[in-house]
Length: 161
Image (tube, rainbow, N blue to C red; front, side, top):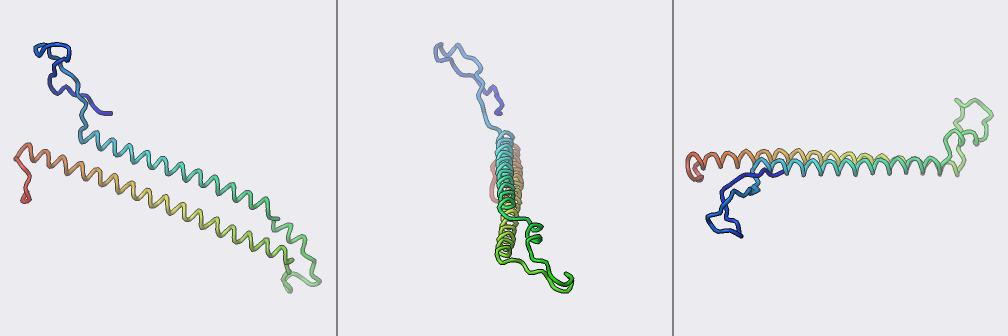
């Protein structure tokens, strides 16, 4: 919120110049600009976290949908023909249609992990950008405050100063 300050007098439009009153004039100070920047950056961070939550819900929904479409590994193992010897001697052979389903499950799992990793990296980058923007805003405010102080106390700013 911008602070109101009484910065002088102004004549009423309806009256004469002798009828003057103080009119509040809204001005943006450096502090208000910094607050506005911080509020804007916080809003951007909130929007990104909301997008990340929506993406996580969508990924969870897709993961649940893949579980419904594919048979569980336990059902696949039950459908395999029993071997004549012990399981340690001969590995079980899976049925051709089951191997396709297992491959599809592995591929979808790998794709899911890549998507999650990409989303995590994207959020990390955006958070790093926001902290950099906050640091830049603070640095800019410090420089402008120092320049205003120097101008008020010493005069004009030159390349030597």
